[in-house]
Image (cartoon, rainbow, N blue to C red; front, top):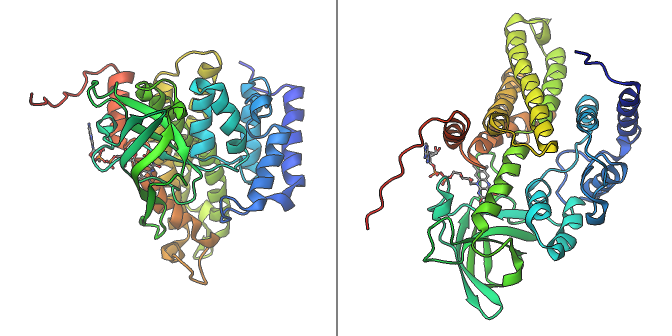
Length: 397
Ligand SMILES: Cc1cc2nc3c(=O)[nH]c(=O)nc-3n(C[C@H](O)[C@H](O)[C@H](O)COP(=O)(O)OP(=O)(O)OC[C@H]3O[C@@H](n4cnc5c(N)ncnc54)[C@H](O)[C@@H]3O)c2cc1C
C-alpha cells in the first residue's frame, strides 16, 4: 500500500498552510463574541478560498467544490498544524444547513443556508423538554393549526445559545392523536417572534451557556415546517446525526493534542520537561493513539458518505468516543499545568486564559448533550452489534 501524497496533493497542502500563515493577522481569537466582525470576516475569507463550506453548492453560498476526501483531510490537518482558527462550527452550520440541504424546500434553502454559513444567522436547537430528553419522542410542546399558521405553546430546556440566536429549529407536536413518533413536526422560526421568552441557565463553567425557552401562542406559518407535517422525527434524526459528527470531530481533538504537546514542552517538574517525564508521556501517547484512531475512523465515515453508503459502526461510535476523548485531553492539560491547573476565572497567573479548565467542565456537558453516553452505548449495542433491544416500558391502557 502506498500512503505517500501525490505531487498535486503536496502542493495543495503547502498552499493551504501558506494561506493560513500568511493571514495570521486576520485570525480571530477564541474568546471573541459570535458576531464579532473579525470572526465573520475570517469565515467569509475561508469560504471564498474553499477552506470552509467547501462542498456546499455555490448557489447556496458555499464554495461549490467536488468532494475530495484527501483534500478535505489536508485542509483540516493544515488548520490543526498551524493552530489557525478552524471554520465556524455551530448548530446552524453543522446541523441545520445539512438538514435543509437534504430535506428543506427551495425557499428555505435560499432564505437561510448562505447567511448561516457566513455566521450571520445564529440558530438554536429546540428539542429537549423537561420531560423529554433521552426519550425525545415524548415531547409535548404543541402546535395547533390556526388558519395558515401554527400556534405554538410549551417549553424547551437546555437550549444552547438561545439568548444569542436569531432562529430556532424546533420539534413540536402537531398531531396529539398520532403514535408518538408520527405526530411530531420540525419547524423553523425567528426567535423574536412574539410569545417567546428565554431564561438563561448557568452551567458549571459559571456561564449561561444554555436556557429555558417558553412559548405562549407563538404564531408561525405552516410553510415553515421542514419536510412534511408529521415527518419531524425523520428530519430530527437527520439533524442529530450531524450533531453527533460535530461534537465528536476528530480534527478538533488533534488540534488539542498538538497544543498539549507544546504545553508539555514548556512545563517542567524539578527542571525536567513534562514531555520527557515517562508518566506524562505515557498518558500523552495513549491519548495520541486514540486521536489517530478517531482520525482514521473519520476517514472511513467520510469515504462511506461520499459513496452514498451507510457508515455503520464507524459512524455510531463518533459521539461517544470523540466527546470522552476531548474531556480526557483537557484533563491531561490541566494536570500538566500542576497547581496552576486549579485556577479559574480572572486569576493573574492563569494559563491560556483558563481555556483548558473551561473545556474540561464544558466537555463534561457535551458527553450528555446530543444524546448521553449511556444512550450512545445503547445505540452501538442495538444498531451496531445487533444485540437485543432494551425492553420498552409497558404503557397502561
Ligand atoms: C451542554 C449541553 C448542551 C445542550 N444543548 C441542547 C440544545 O441546544 N438543545 C436541546 O434541545 N437540548 C440540549 N441539551 C439537552 C440534551 O440533549 C439532554 O440533556 C440529553 O438528551 C439527556 O436528556 P435529559 O437531560 O432529559 O436526561 P434524561 O433523559 O432524563 O437521562 C437521565 C439519565 O438517565 C440515563 N438514561 C435515560 N434513558 C436511558 C436508557 N434508555 N438507557 C440507559 N440510560 C438511560 C441518561 O443516560 C442519563 O444519565 C444539552 C445538554 C447539555 C448537557
